Image (cartoon, rainbow, N blue to C red; front, side, top):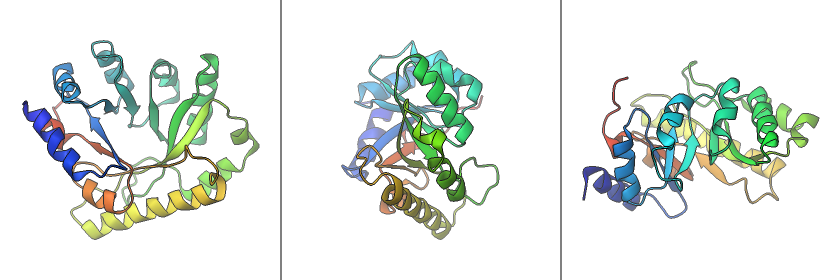
Length: 224
């Protein structure tokens, strides 16, 4: 068994049945992704459109790709034919673009709303006021080619576990508020994507249903 396969096996023992593992393969070569695939992993996350496009045609077609990094509107059309989920929808403008491009190819695309939960200003994402304003707009009800499946967030990069737990708990509370008010009858609105290699255990305790893990599977990130 390869090191990558061992790492996946160990991780899956710590992740409950109601949560899914996204293997974050940014900066990693196709050979590493194939090792993870051969170990049974099918869900992979990439941050950059260009890197994802350079890899996907060299890999099995049943891989479910998730876009987890900041997405520019002008690059949406390149990933829509094959993407399984866009986790990083961080503006109303981006959601409108995804909907418009998806309509052109008759697809309904699964999306998560990225909420800003961290202290760092560099993180992207909605605040709750913006989400409420968007959902209650007439434009939102007209978007038939996106499926809102839940929320995503990235915690502050800190060793303070209390801070991280507070941010994950806040995201979980945001999910519950949005679900109860706007999606209570929608079974597709069920995902809370939070937690990475350094904090996924905290995230799972706070209710995460998707953890995005890279270095614990593939080792430290390769320098570009």
